[in-house]
Image (cartoon, rainbow over all chains, first blue to last red; front, side, top):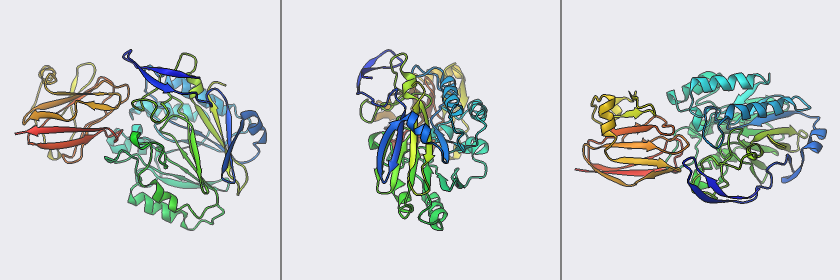
Length: 311
Length: 120
């Protein structure tokens, strides 16, 4: 897919130079083995899926109704149908934030209803769109029960230690996400007593690594958080926010961002701003999707299957 | 005063703590507010505040109008002033009652910067 024009809602066309997104329309498996990511087709990955698996969805933006996707409820449903159709039932589902577009009660209700239909436990972290009402309490009251602070927490499943972090509160003038000292101290303490062979999965809304500073796609104190995870042999960081797949590996840490189930956003620096990207009719579902994560073995890395809604 | 105008033209009072706000509280009927919106205006589009900086006189009511297809807000850290999220075609107004140079950001997208210069 190549498109060099973005049509904005007001009809103005601006040149965006959206170069070929090689992953669009193809189901890819990302296997990070020994710090080196490699990709496979979804079929082979599914065949190999015999271990612990979970699913990540992100950025459903329920309530968004602009030209980039006028029916985000339907595309979330499609994503959840894909989850339901997985050959091996995943242990649970993670939502990496921007569950809603405007933190409205009806939007949270729709999310709870649709996601509840999968019969999977859902672990969430808030995006900046989920904390627009009541200083984030409307999110916490619905999805953050039993969490600490602004909604951070950890749990163990399948031999993996999972940590949900909140980096969308009190955004500062540097434009980046932030965790804050209270959460950092909690994280340090939370992982201190774990053995270094414990696989760690950290999930948060805004990327913990610096994807693109000009658009605030990074977390100012993310590096500090990662220092607490250096001793672990396998660390996987799952984020949302940027509505596209990106990944990198740094030492023992694999970073991965998920697609949105609602609308795509431009690649860093390819447009004037990070607004919703209108793609040619029929191509939207290639830009939306879910991630299916497999724990390959207790020491080795996680295989992440990104599935576009259309494949 | 701070008011939020929704697309239907309905102005609702914000539940901002007045003690934290540097604004003068004036009661305005929705019709009067529509007139206020004709004052200095900052348009938000494509993740940008325009114009910025905006220079006004003390007592001016500035209106931010969101023409973008994503919600935005206006946060003045030094004034402890925070607007609610404005969805597309929603606006927010604030009356500046003291001179000074005031920087602000978008509370959702903090890389968006703006400045209001209030002259005595």
